[in-house]
Image (tube, rainbow, N blue to C red; front, side, top):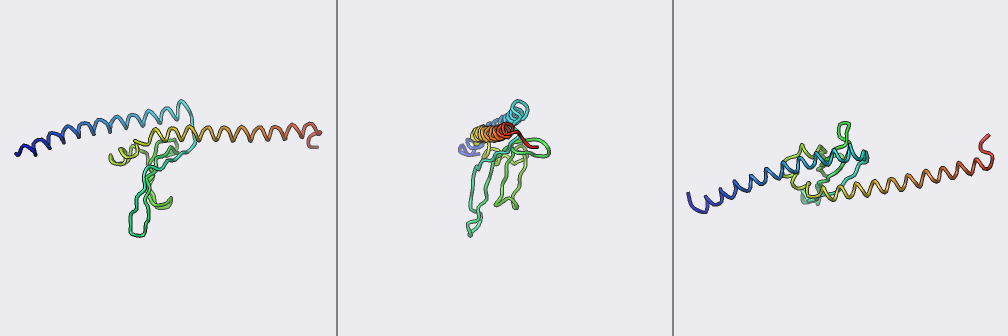
Length: 148
């Protein structure tokens, strides 16, 4: 065996060991994030973040990869959707995708968490404003004698 081939195979073995390790670590991280969002935070709101988009034909049709936090079979999970539109796409939990998709999307997990936090804040502010408005209207009606 040539020295360059031997070196390449040794490097491949080392690299794949690292690849397996980081993939396993990412899987454990996603499980921990789901537990945090579901058990500690009870977020319960769907959030999506585009990861990548690429042309798939000569007409410019684009296939998108989207990382999200969404309800999957009764509970919220970190999910990935790949497709050209909602009708022609596939969504499933991050853990069920192939290694390449996992590695591509896990890079955006910090961004997804920031987007979830921002979306929660937006929903809280909107709900606070709506409840305050309704409360004010009800108080005004009470002052005028209320409904009869």
